[in-house]
Image 1 (cartoon, one colour):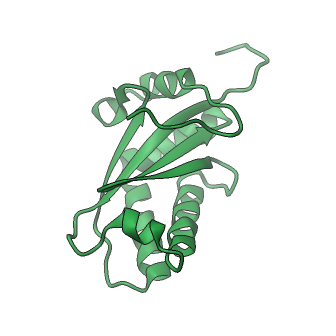
Image 2 (cartoon, helix red, strand yellow):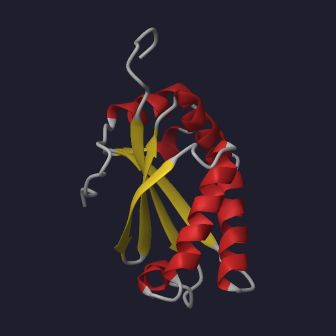
Length: 150
């Protein structure tokens, strides 16, 4: 990784689930009217987490009830590091809740989040940022994305 002229690229999956029984994220995303609102909320929250609109790419959003699974692609290690810090500190979750609330015109959208790279559950190792970066870096993706392994 270090000293290499090749760009740093990695991938992770963000699993999202509402803890409210009346808010089912996959159903909202599958709705033609609500999908743009959910997508916009995701984009804005991810931009907040890295400090840049281009900090992380959303390659694909999968609906796997009860989860909404977002495939993320990072093109710079520093952006990935900022994302991990935001995720660990709960800032990403708070930002996404706020953006969903605004874009869907709801009072509150309680969320549970889980972050995975390959078979690794990154939530279990968030304090070891370098190990998380290593797991994300090992997950290579092409520009078109790839299907989630379920």
